[in-house]
Length: 390
Image (cartoon, rainbow, N blue to C red; front, top):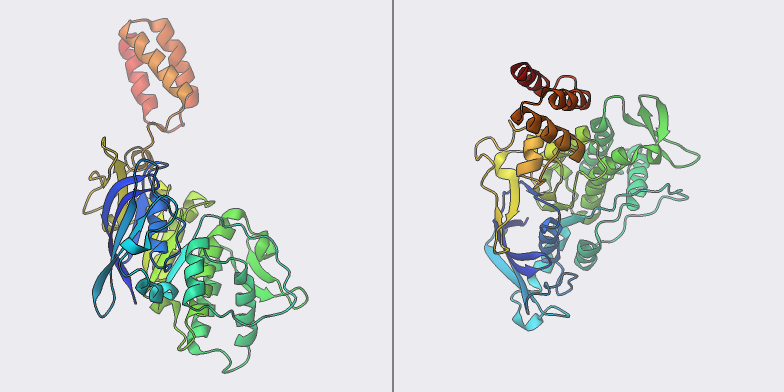
């Protein structure tokens, strides 16, 4: 078991200065584009890579650094990584090999979640993932192609009494539930004996796994991939995914997902991996809206270039009572969520009101009424303003 307590980053990628403390379960990093969300996740992941790093310092400094604080069941400790222009400065590091021992407890999923159809000609054995291969995957991201082979292997062997351990049987059932979690009407149906394809029940009939929409594919391969990776890494003894107490790092867990699925994947991760420490970045107001307040890390850049946690998020209820527009503006950093055309017509309307020009106000009012949602409260406000003008 290992958990990350805090991190301090200086002059790495787009980040000039940043200090963060982390929640023991969910940590949802959000903010405007380019603020450094992915860089934070990469610093966390590459802390467990021995002395191999892809991260580089930014061009405005001579030295980049991050310091990560951790604990396990025995003690608390920290690691410092300092990076010069071309390569990490090993001489300036402390404890740069020791965290490699924890690499099997850390899983990293990057944003590329395409899954092309893969014919399975034979069911292969599980790969051997030692700590060095696990650390390599923290730089490249986990392998999605293995998901289909793993699922078919476990399903076929589950029909033979005693071949799978109780933990493996439990994990297979958890994997089947992933399809149910996607949406009403979906469930696992069978393995096609002629093609070795995973066949699913869907609201429109039987379909092959790879025929799912990109959103459902993205939802499924994150959750199935995590279950698969935990099974591959822990064999003596096997463990249930619900007992995994390591670290899951998922860059933009909402990518490709419909807004309804964006909230569902947060709930699914919480349900499937209740003991894991989860780090993710998001552009989804729907994820932020359902998260607990201590799980949200909304970043904002100060005038001096440093990043800080935006204090606007309520410490007791988070953003659970906020509108989507309020989250987009104040948490995600969007300047405005309305179209330029709408803002132009609204400006014309307000200028006509100020000038007591009923004709121009009517003209802008008619356009705005066509643009607004039928139930938008602004319709009534505009109507009252027009009555006052007349």
